[in-house]
Length: 294
Image (cartoon, rainbow, N blue to C red):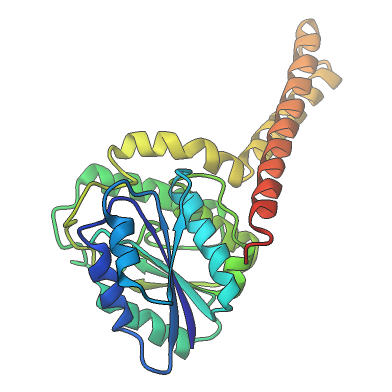
């Protein structure tokens, strides 16, 4: 089978060589895997990758546009190799690399599933260290938001492995930086892709600091605007309120404030329209940016 592994990295000099070598050993002689490494590193990570000097290792510049951009750039670039499955995996040592075999086995066994996700919460005792309660609380909030607005019932939207079919990468659009894990599921829902979770261990981080979560509260604050737009909440909220205010004006429920209701409804409609147009401009720019890179 043909596989492509997308590894977004930033200053992972302590782990990257072991990650590549360990992952390479998981594939049989009948499998072909290309490693697409998208780097924003300032340490010796890039030098280590180049020193491996293997034809199936492709080093791309992340352009310092963030994690979501790196994942998207890597996935679109990987399409040129026509892989049957692609996967992203964290390179910080928190993922048990032996588990990639579980994903390959599941993919070979069940062709009806488009996306396999790792989950730290599908079973008990999968987290191998004292996971901060505030982080778990934030993860649950984001997971429930995604489940509420999509047709999924995932237990973990932030697992370290995403294993998916070629057609998922073709449709993938990521607008934000650290929202890519949620946007991945939003895109899957919009496109009617099927999702299955696989229990996965979460190990104590061995090197560096998390690129995603320093403060879970700050993280939620930063991702909220992107998720607000990607989930089309701007249309649902602004247009619904606009209709309410317009009919309040139309039926003169409070005649002395009718002009206020009318102007408010117009502002809400225009705001929703502007946000939708802005979202579509960004989406089309992303599509055009990677259109000829696959």
